[in-house]
Amino acid sequence: MRITFPASAPEYRGWNLTVGFPARVDGQDVDCAISAEALEDHFGAPSPGATDLLDAFNAHRPEIEQAARRLLHTVHTTDLLLHSGHFRFPLDGPARHTSSRGEA
Image (cartoon, rainbow, N blue to C red; front, side, top):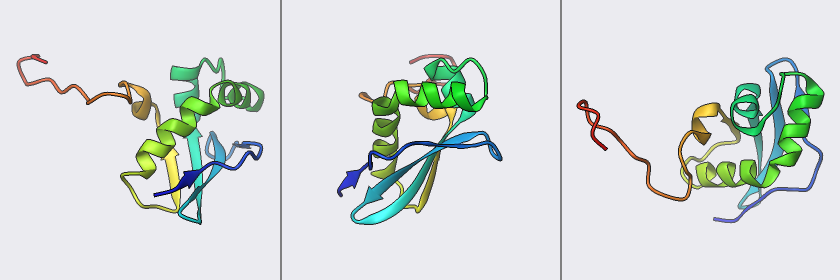
């Protein structure tokens, strides 16, 4: 699977508080976005305002695109929305699951 991210400017989407960015998966366009909550919780955006979200996105674009790439390898879609939960656990290793007794 070939996934690329065109070097176009990200798009602030005030109507749903996301920042949109394009991807191409095996020659097909995919509309990607990251939520304001994810940018605030994990990438230092101080508010859901356009400037703050775009600044946080631009400062962390490689990390955000890497998360999108990993998800696009597992789901086939024409639009992808990254939420805060997609960044809660390290993306390089297996996810840790705990049992009902709190054991790792």
